[in-house]
Amino acid sequence: MIQDVYQSKEIANQYHADRLSSGFRRYKHWMECYYLKKYIDTLNEPILDVGCGTGRITEYLLELGFKPTATDDSAAMLDVFNKRLGKQKKIKTICTDITRLPFPDKKFATVITIRVIWHLPHQKIKKALHELSRVSSDSLVFDITNRQYSESLLGKILLGIFSLRGMPRNSIYSQESEVSDILKKHKFVLHSKSNLESIPHLWLNLWPTAQIPLSLFKTARLADKLFRFILPPQRQLLFYTRVK
Ligand SMILES: C[S@@+](CC[C@H](N)C(=O)[O-])C[C@H]1O[C@@H](n2cnc3c(N)ncnc32)[C@H](O)[C@@H]1O
Image (cartoon, rainbow, N blue to C red; front, side):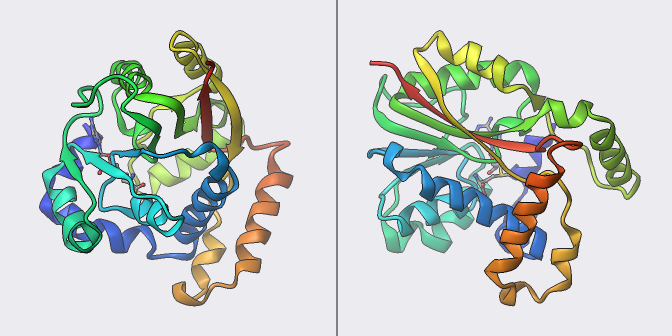
């Protein structure tokens, strides 16, 4: 199972540097941060970052002025997290499965989980959504990989090319409407849906990673928007709020 790879110390040690190791990866990170900041008004404290990994998003939440609690089911990932920022920032980390969060109902105002849901096996996604909505009093923020992309002609071609190049097809694709139906039962309604990457912008990898100008990320985002007519977004960032 794909989530098991994160139990490995070797993977955990490489993970953080890898996430920002190319222009395209930086673009994906930039987009996530862009939308988290855009919807900052919906992010009330206390905040829980589930599947925090080595702390990429937790770190950004700290930058935005929040003091999140962080959980992950991989001791190896949390070990790197704690070495990177846990101790100096006094962030509380807990090693636990997303479907068994050791918190009372509505303990957190906001629950965030990025790049986690689509790594879970299908039958676990529903359980995870129930658990996330149980511990959140106000809002839920997470990304899904979009089934419309994987079922579109161009999406199928791109996924085929990437699997031919030896890259694993490690995503469970979902549909926003299915997710919304599950969350409706917990009184969460969709507040906003932001489209993340569509096209694999490998041209961004031509730049030295630390020197990519912001204008290139903006160009990539514009290209993603223009291509939407023939290629749905591969990932979407969903913001849900609880109806009072
Ligand atoms: C792709 S990483 C994302 C890490 C971080 N959220 C980020 O965006 O950089 C996926 C993380 O989800 C965690 N994970 C996978 N399955 C999980 C589960 N069942 N319960 C809790 N965490 C899980 C993994 O250990 C890993 O740290």
